[in-house]
Image 1 (cartoon, rainbow, N blue to C red):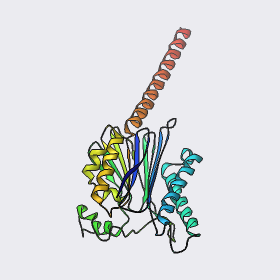
Image 2: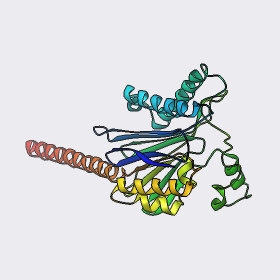
Image 3: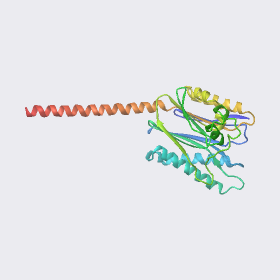
Image 4: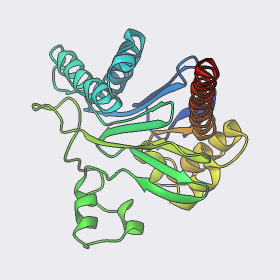
Length: 288
């Protein structure tokens, strides 16, 4: 069981992954930030497909995310359109990689979060999750594209039983299959005090929503991330899954920018009103 954490951090976000009880690491992730545009892109992928295809798949998703970020497509596209393009291009990349393989097919989940100014957009395919917290309160989480999630929606099992259900790893959607994926999207206004958690199933199967909420609120994101991954690996045991996790806290900066923009708007309107008043006064005096 390998507890070594591959750690990565940027402003207001911390990420890491560990191999756990698996022989290879099939989870991958990336965190990107443009401070001049107050924009973050966080992407996490969980590969599968057998005979080394899982590592190849998750790596392909992350490479596409980095390439699209560097091309700056997010500057000119709405968040949902950018994330849709990212997922579809990643799917096409996995299809290309699969052409050179025999007896293995690169498939992957993906969950991606784009924070830009006071807006947040997300997209996902598969059972890697996004949790959104306001303080310690769960605002929402993505719904897995799995048979187990379908059973949950039908009332055949509870949320607490989901992680251990025999159908949990039977996915209904993924990247790299014969058909283009149906990508699920969401968006919201960014609010002060919000935190975000992106994770692979190796994490959420071992940590409760309450634990993720508590850890995501920690001031020291690095220490919180290490504790979360250590817990997931320990609880997974010798045969435990890979684990990958991202904590992000960008709400305060988004709120500050929104407040600043509103303040400037009020100041501009006030200045324009004063100019008009002064001009009207000057005209009245001239006519007199």
